[in-house]
Picture 1 (cartoon, rainbow, N blue to C red):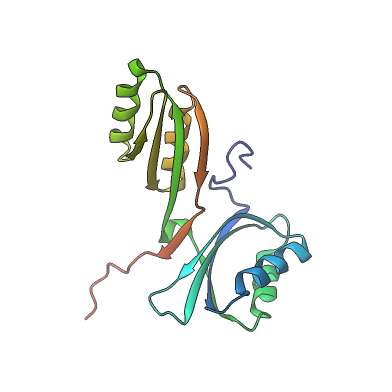
Picture 2 (picture 1 turned 120 degrees about the horizontal axis):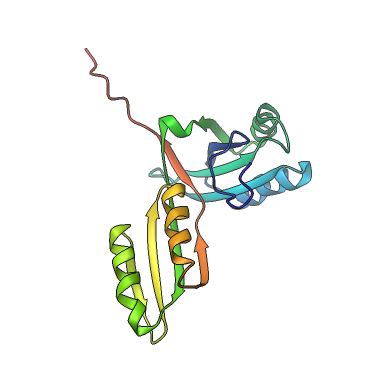
Length: 174
């Protein structure tokens, strides 16, 4: 397991897409279930779907803390859970958002702006000795960008956690 990067793709991490009823307290019940059972969550993101009756919870779980089948069985015991899908990274599209404040001197500012442009990031705010950047992309892309920013000095950063959906079928239907 890549301990330096909790977002890395390792065989012990699996992405679950959990469709739930959009009701107060559902996220708390899901998180509580993981805490009670001692299951480890590496990433968690939740938002309403296009149907206001449902929300999607994307959870990256550590299957070393419990077998995936056990986690799924426990989740299905919650009455608000409608559907659970395991998303294989090879057959899904994953994205994550990162916002970071990076220390820069006036001489370095152009280098950091160019780096952001190369990675298709955005400059959100510029100060005398720091820049706030945002970037969305695959977890690996954000890891690479963070690694390059460290040489300048990351003052603080925040990542949203992964969100994912299955890839679309490209085969023509007859």
